Amino acid sequence: MVRANDPVADCALAAGPAGATISSDTGKTLSELGDHRNAEKHRRAALAGRDPEKFRRIHALTLGELASTLDQRGHMDEAVSTWGRC
Image (cartoon, rainbow, N blue to C red; front, side, top):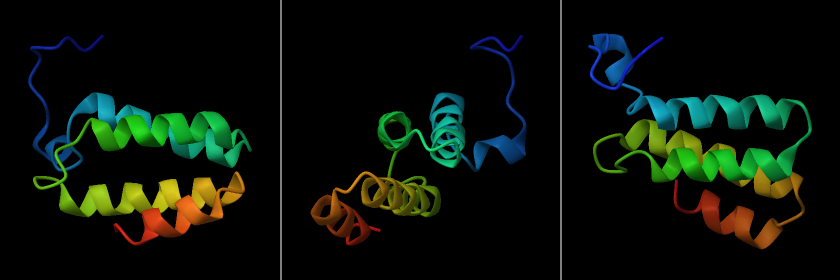
């Protein structure tokens, strides 16, 4: 089990905080399973868990994934607006 004070591998630091990475991966999995409502929740949590300036690339990718999820949910206007923030 990983504890809060355990060292983090250098390669893991590129993705940002572990909680945000787990939320992102959970969102991807839920989206693949067709649970777009909960996927949206986890993708938003991933966005909130990372500094958008420090993790620009992964933030932009997560915004794109959120936009896709919003599209799947039928929220086209919000999806387009989210794509515009990438």
